Length: 126
Image (cartoon, rainbow, N blue to C red; front, side, top):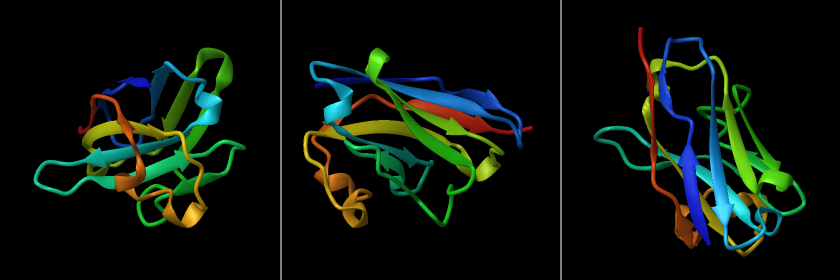
Protein backbone atom coordinates (compact mmCIF):
# COMPACT_ATOMS: atom_id res chain seq x y z
CA UNK A 1 0.00 0.00 0.00
CA UNK A 2 1.30 3.42 -0.93
CA UNK A 3 -0.15 6.66 0.37
CA UNK A 4 0.12 10.14 -1.13
CA UNK A 5 -0.88 13.11 1.00
CA UNK A 6 -1.69 16.47 -0.55
CA UNK A 7 -3.65 19.67 -0.04
CA UNK A 8 -1.56 21.54 2.48
CA UNK A 9 -0.77 25.22 2.23
CA UNK A 10 -0.85 28.61 3.88
CA UNK A 11 -4.19 29.79 5.23
CA UNK A 12 -5.43 32.64 7.39
CA UNK A 13 -6.77 31.96 10.89
CA UNK A 14 -10.41 31.00 10.60
CA UNK A 15 -9.89 29.62 7.12
CA UNK A 16 -10.33 26.12 5.73
CA UNK A 17 -8.30 23.49 3.94
CA UNK A 18 -9.04 20.02 2.67
CA UNK A 19 -6.27 17.44 2.76
CA UNK A 20 -6.32 14.30 0.65
CA UNK A 21 -4.72 10.91 1.20
CA UNK A 22 -4.74 8.85 -1.98
CA UNK A 23 -4.06 5.13 -1.68
CA UNK A 24 -2.70 2.70 -4.23
CA UNK A 25 -2.28 -1.04 -3.99
CA UNK A 26 -5.40 -1.72 -1.98
CA UNK A 27 -8.99 -0.52 -1.82
CA UNK A 28 -9.15 2.29 0.70
CA UNK A 29 -12.54 1.06 1.89
CA UNK A 30 -10.77 -1.96 3.39
CA UNK A 31 -8.24 0.12 5.33
CA UNK A 32 -8.24 2.02 8.58
CA UNK A 33 -6.85 5.44 7.65
CA UNK A 34 -5.60 8.00 10.11
CA UNK A 35 -4.25 11.52 10.04
CA UNK A 36 -1.46 12.59 12.36
CA UNK A 37 0.40 15.87 12.64
CA UNK A 38 3.72 17.10 13.95
CA UNK A 39 4.46 20.68 14.85
CA UNK A 40 8.05 21.94 15.14
CA UNK A 41 9.63 20.77 18.36
CA UNK A 42 6.64 18.65 19.32
CA UNK A 43 5.78 14.97 19.20
CA UNK A 44 3.53 13.67 16.47
CA UNK A 45 -0.10 13.59 17.56
CA UNK A 46 -3.25 11.89 16.41
CA UNK A 47 -5.81 14.01 14.54
CA UNK A 48 -8.54 11.77 13.12
CA UNK A 49 -9.17 8.29 11.74
CA UNK A 50 -11.79 6.32 9.87
CA UNK A 51 -12.07 2.58 9.72
CA UNK A 52 -13.88 0.14 7.39
CA UNK A 53 -17.59 0.57 7.98
CA UNK A 54 -17.20 4.29 8.48
CA UNK A 55 -16.61 4.61 12.22
CA UNK A 56 -14.66 7.79 12.92
CA UNK A 57 -12.51 8.98 15.77
CA UNK A 58 -11.19 12.47 16.43
CA UNK A 59 -8.74 14.04 18.80
CA UNK A 60 -11.40 15.48 21.08
CA UNK A 61 -9.05 17.93 22.77
CA UNK A 62 -7.83 19.71 19.67
CA UNK A 63 -9.90 19.18 16.52
CA UNK A 64 -13.31 17.68 17.24
CA UNK A 65 -16.03 19.91 15.88
CA UNK A 66 -13.69 21.63 13.43
CA UNK A 67 -12.21 18.77 11.40
CA UNK A 68 -14.10 16.11 9.43
CA UNK A 69 -12.64 12.92 8.02
CA UNK A 70 -14.37 11.24 5.09
CA UNK A 71 -13.73 8.60 2.48
CA UNK A 72 -14.27 8.66 -1.29
CA UNK A 73 -14.16 5.04 -2.37
CA UNK A 74 -14.47 5.86 -6.07
CA UNK A 75 -11.26 7.92 -5.88
CA UNK A 76 -9.60 5.62 -3.34
CA UNK A 77 -9.00 8.68 -1.21
CA UNK A 78 -9.59 9.82 2.36
CA UNK A 79 -10.12 13.53 2.96
CA UNK A 80 -9.58 15.66 6.04
CA UNK A 81 -11.68 18.80 5.92
CA UNK A 82 -10.29 21.40 8.33
CA UNK A 83 -12.45 24.40 9.23
CA UNK A 84 -11.92 27.33 11.59
CA UNK A 85 -8.18 26.77 11.47
CA UNK A 86 -6.03 28.17 14.26
CA UNK A 87 -2.32 29.00 14.38
CA UNK A 88 -1.83 26.01 16.67
CA UNK A 89 -2.98 23.75 13.83
CA UNK A 90 0.25 24.57 12.01
CA UNK A 91 2.11 21.31 11.45
CA UNK A 92 3.17 18.71 8.94
CA UNK A 93 0.19 16.43 8.42
CA UNK A 94 0.73 12.73 7.70
CA UNK A 95 -1.73 10.08 6.60
CA UNK A 96 -1.33 6.48 7.66
CA UNK A 97 -3.19 3.26 6.96
CA UNK A 98 -3.47 -0.31 8.11
CA UNK A 99 -5.30 -3.40 6.96
CA UNK A 100 -6.67 -4.00 10.44
CA UNK A 101 -9.84 -2.61 11.94
CA UNK A 102 -9.69 -1.75 15.61
CA UNK A 103 -11.99 -0.56 18.34
CA UNK A 104 -12.25 3.22 18.44
CA UNK A 105 -10.29 3.38 21.66
CA UNK A 106 -7.03 2.48 19.92
CA UNK A 107 -7.52 4.06 16.50
CA UNK A 108 -5.32 6.97 17.57
CA UNK A 109 -2.28 4.85 18.37
CA UNK A 110 0.26 5.58 15.65
CA UNK A 111 2.28 2.45 16.32
CA UNK A 112 -0.60 0.35 14.99
CA UNK A 113 -0.40 1.83 11.47
CA UNK A 114 1.78 -0.05 8.99
CA UNK A 115 1.72 2.29 6.01
CA UNK A 116 2.66 5.96 6.03
CA UNK A 117 2.60 8.67 3.42
CA UNK A 118 4.86 11.67 3.16
CA UNK A 119 3.74 14.76 5.00
CA UNK A 120 2.00 17.86 3.73
CA UNK A 121 2.67 21.20 5.39
CA UNK A 122 -0.22 23.21 6.82
CA UNK A 123 0.57 26.74 7.99
CA UNK A 124 -2.05 28.91 9.67
CA UNK A 125 -0.85 32.47 9.92
CA UNK A 126 -1.91 36.04 9.31
